[in-house]
Length: 200
Length: 136
Image 1 (tube, chains in turn yellow, blue):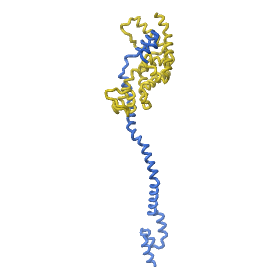
Image 2 (image 1 turned 90 degrees about the vertical axis):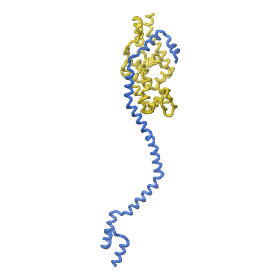
Image 3 (image 1 turned 120 degrees about the vertical axis):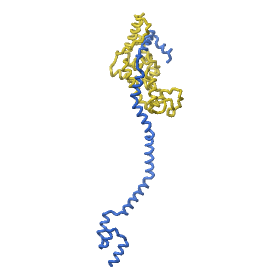
Image 4 (image 1 turned 120 degrees about the horizontal axis):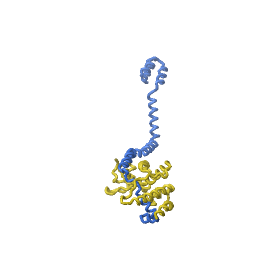
């Protein structure tokens, strides 16, 4: 094992033992083969990466496999990571590209796995049914969105990425992200309109 | 973008509610420890290679420097050294006559005594002189 994760990072500012190293500092250590640093990066991004992969792939097993592949791909490419930039957009670009490629290669559409429902026990059967129906409608509507719009909505509305972050991950401008988001929401609103009208 | 802006984007309450529902729609029983172990296990060899590459990185970086130094030294010392070596080889060649030269010399000997001296290695100038005096 190389130097300690919290140790000095190749000429950069010293990191005090108490302070958590940044992603970039960890990435620099990973470039030198530090397994602890790699594990820390995995721990930090694994859940969010799984969330994104699951939104885009719709299958739990596929999402798990893809998260693993993406971390390994990132490790293979870590020497090309520009340490003057943020780690997160660089890594999620690898992940999202792989997700989109996986979808294309499987020609998958409308095959979203229905995960375990997370509905409070207090909710009445009627409310549960309504919620389930609403989610089902939204899922279907999202599946019909163009690839890029679905990716943007998933990342922004469901996984909490900001529009500049998404822009960097997808390699497009912030304005383009917002435009796609606006378009996607318009389509989703229209898709949910009959449901909302019936409920009213 | 802050939460306020985010909410502003979702002007439709039905869509906002549906989105909120969908947000929780991720499997919650993923075995994170197993996934993490699996990722780290698969990464082990690559990390080992990176560590090994770090160790040999310093000597490798010195290779161009050493090569440059050798070329510079050769350019500076090369001609003089080659000349010395050439002269040394010539001296060596003249000091040690070849077998052919020795045979030719022996066959050209005028008398038996000269031949004997040449073959026995005694072909020195004083020996020749002694032989010449005796013959007269």
